[in-house]
Image (cartoon, rainbow, N blue to C red; front, side, top):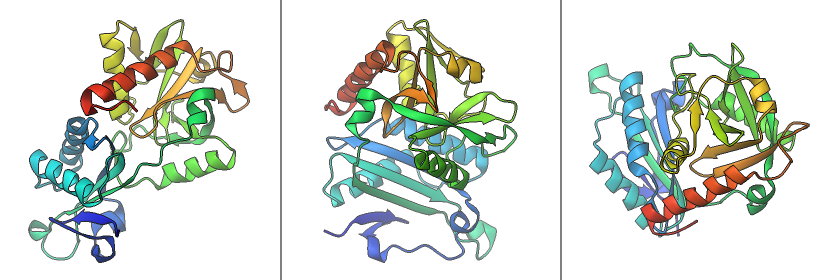
Length: 287
């Protein structure tokens, strides 16, 4: 069956889907995207994804004429058209073609869904290695903290990590504060307290990150959002990463440095269980 996508108000075969050669997202990266995940035919934390999309569109002046009901309906149409239940979605919204008068320009909306390809199970049992990115996050960059389509620097750094047999690379700011991974948020555990960089660092307000913070609050686990540095990373008892596809990924090595005792920690395991329960409560299916 040919993959179906939703492009500018209609479902179509992927071979029929085309964007303008003057599209601002294609030419200049003037766009936003959301990566989502469904379980048993239900999109997890969909409201949070749309809230973030709408907030970033407002801040960055991305034209968004769609309401939440319209986008929700379009997302589920793509899911149904591709006969998927456990899927990975991408919603991309750009300012559309540059041609014509500015007031007449229409945005480009593209929604795709593919069968979920999860991370290897071994990653969750034994943990993964991360490297330290040589690239720094500029806190004055106006798109920092938003999920824009300008992701090339992240992909370059992630590829370097993969070449070194690492799963992720940790980014620091230009003033040496811990920020995030290329495609993930980062958490440290020290003496049973969870630490994570402040959103105002700035870092992406990840949806999985938000859910981990909620889980900690509801389970009376102390979680502190604060500025962190390399000493905090190397002194952590546990480290884990989050994003909507990886969920909660344990880190057992930072380059040649072993995290804790080199095994997946008790706090990480506890949060993984609670995260699975949250998925089950929202989607009716534990993954």
